[in-house]
Amino acid sequence: MKLCELLIIRLIFNGNIMSDKDTKAATKEEIKESVEINKDPVRKITKYMLVITAFVFVWYIIADRHAPWSDQARVQTYIIPIVPQVSGRITNVLVKQDQVVEAGDILFEIDTSDYQLAVDNAEASLELAGQEIGAGMATVVTAQAQVVVAETNVEHVKAQSARVFEMEEKNVLSHSDGDKARAAIKASEAQLVSAEANLDKAKQALGVEGNKNPRIRSAMAKLKKAQLDLSRTVMVAPGRGGITNLQIDTGYFANAGAPVMTFVEYGNVWIQVNLRENNLANLAIGNAVDISLDVNPGTIYKGKISTIGFAVETSTTGAIGGLASVESSTGWLRDAQRFPVMITFDDDSAKGMLRLGGQADVQVYTGDNWFVNTMGWLWIRVLSVLSYVY
Image (cartoon, rainbow, N blue to C red):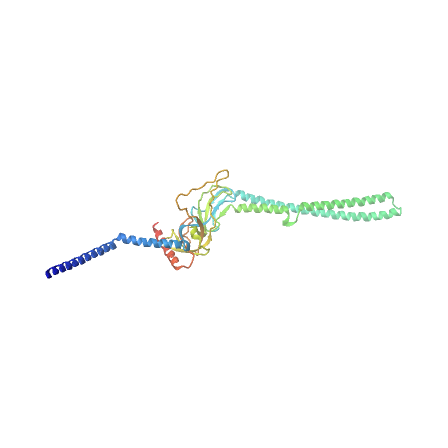
């Protein structure tokens, strides 16, 4: 009996030992498998990428409204067509394609022969008008003298007639002599009226005296117009900028009102960035902006928002007599509408780097949130460095 019990106890004990060994073996296998899993680089990278993607997604949603970024930004400036105001053959072109010019630099010259002749004719006309005015003045003086003579004659005739009338009353002279005296008075008065009329006529023909005289003013206006046209034969640069689209050379006949080259201004340059409607919620004029220019990778320029667009063209109405066209959009997400936002530079540090149409990345800061602003600060600088390779 004791032997059987001893055998049973030993079997149970041995069974427990084997069970513990199996358990330990299974645990070691799981640990080994877990270590192998942790050592798998694909799984590890996948975990990191998921974490990073989730972080970027959350930051994107927040930054979309509080620190918007866009790469749809381009350098803009004023474009001025160089249009001659007078017609003529070009005698000299003093600029070349893509040349930088300063304000007042001569661009080209037009033949001055016809315009110098017009100035000479206008000067002669002015002198002639002066001579005519002088002659008119002489006529006025003569007419004035005739009036004085007529007035004197009237007084003399009246004085003589008064004596005749006295003698007539005393019957010393006949009534016939009295009638002659009265006729002489009327004739002298008529001569005075005629002289006064001639004086008025001379004054009307003369007009206003001095530079206010209509003929003088007309002659002076023609002279100024001729001188202005002569000055316009020399075309100068309106400011500091560059010449492009040069289409003329010596001998070309320039027509007034037809552009011959294009002037791109350098003095007033800005960035136009097209932001989505979601980006505009917290934007305000004066918001700080970081700018990365593709032309100068790795450098960040400071700027601020100057204007925020509030309208874009969306009409699809056709021409008069036609039908409106309707654009169909495929997909389950519609395209975001974008509005232009203008950004000016804080200083001239980007001077010489700006070319019309050049691309840029823009990071806007709408508030004081340190986390969002820090992420935006890092993001624009990473993109600035990456622009070395594209």
